[in-house]
Length: 375
Image (tube, rainbow, N blue to C red):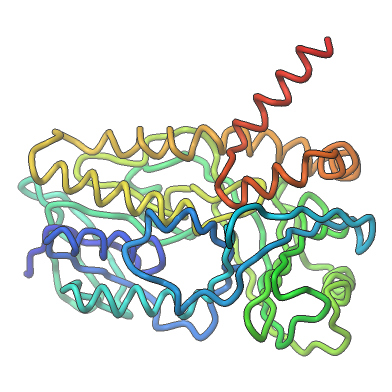
């Protein structure tokens, strides 16, 4: 059996970021990843540039587009355009490049990576974790990080996050060319998808397209509507392969740590329940996970409870309002579009959420204040 300071279950964005953050602090880290390398990562790739402070490396080689405008449409009409303020506040990254940068930098910093290897059993022995894998080997660590994504087996097993996770149904695809989407704009398309929306995010020479439903587990199996959406983005002939995924979204303030164990990213149910943003909470949780583990090992704190507190304060409070907004908006989307998106200040506010300048909580407080003034 080989021992490490930290073993991380899952080598995606949140797992690799946590590993690199810890390795740079001098700790021995093992990542156990069940999948081989993916040729296509089903991710829109949108990321606020303000997340630079949470990044453990330079990612300029993974940035494909710098966004200046956010476009909103209702069934390919009724356009609303919001300008993003500041210099390149929102980036589109190519996840394949980003993940490779993280993997390469992690290896350079001493992180060990096993893949494809499946974790079969995890037990606690003598205050350490013992991880048994299908390669017939066992690994020992003092701390354990659960980062196995939206389909996490281990988050529920260790009671990390909501007891009953909520999921968004999503379809992702990538088409060559940009269609009718400007290279410096992202588009959100409402009205076609029941209980959700579609999005188009431009890379250098291709377009990441996604469709998602966020309440009632509504299916996305209507191919006629799906093709109509793709045509609205400017594609007529489009042989494509779709990737269907259930995305674990934020569903309440819950503990996401236990005794020498914590969950990060999608496994912790941190994905934005309104706009499906997953990169930002992955980076934030990875940063605070490494910070708290470091503080525990160095004796500054006695347990990992500060991790849950930090994530709830820095992300969860905003997501609580995001979930409320989603539950109302997606049940009454036409009214929400007219009174929300088309309201004079709304596009700017949504753009500020995407760029990290504002939270859903900030918007909710403004609405409440406005209602009190007008009552």
